[in-house]
Image (cartoon, rainbow, N blue to C red; front, side, top):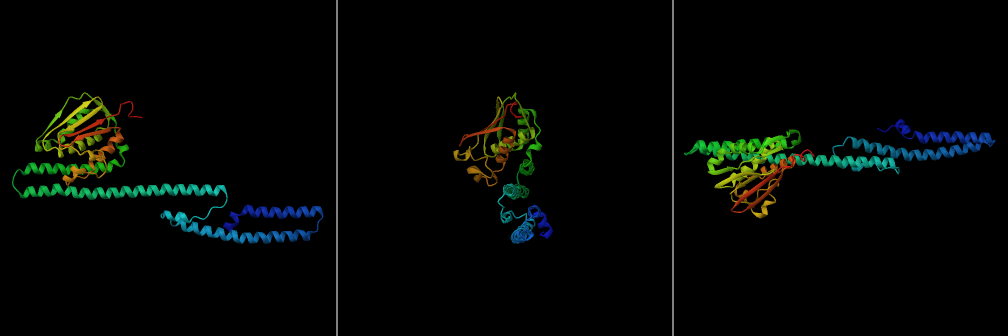
Length: 330
């Protein structure tokens, strides 16, 4: 808020110089024996010029203070920073303005990032609600009809569990680094746990599963590696009408290969993009394009390279290349 006192304090150096100049000017004339009327005349002229300057300077100072007051009450609006008072021709004030502009830019980026993350969450949860309705509807129809109700209900219940777990993982991925527990694990143990979880779907779809001996240990997070394997295995089962899924290992690489319908060449480089379902996904109306996107995100955090090759009508091969133990901590 503008006050006379605040302005005097702001320009105290100018007034101090003015008083010192008048004092020394008077003292010089007195010691030189010059008439004092000339001192009075010079002092009056200097004071008059100073008053004119004060009027314009105080008006400018008052205007700047008012703009800053309005800005301080409207900090949520980043465009308000454009109304900052013009900088004086001094380096210090220009540097202050540069700092303010940099902070405004960081704030704008942070705000945009938060809005984007919020929009992504809304999109995901909206999609999840639609997904969860599908198995619930299937369960209701199974109860109304005849046939092997237990088998159908078991599958649909498994899908509901999958969707619920996906939401939990989606939330945790936002702060993945704090959730990682890196240790040595047997690759075969993790693979067999994943197969056991999906045993119901293997049996229902009559898909064979083959696990070649793996004498491989990897330095990773077991829970999140399990999540990656789940997403790949889920897609393998979904798009394999019949045949088998094979697990094998070569040095520090896990290979998951199926005999499914394969992926079109134009889709291979995009299957890990968020929301991308490709040609196969359009055949399956429940495909979300989220699972493999999250798997890739987790793999990047763990330093795992994912390589995917596929041929339409033959099958798909996914290779998970783990980092060397000496590199994972770098």
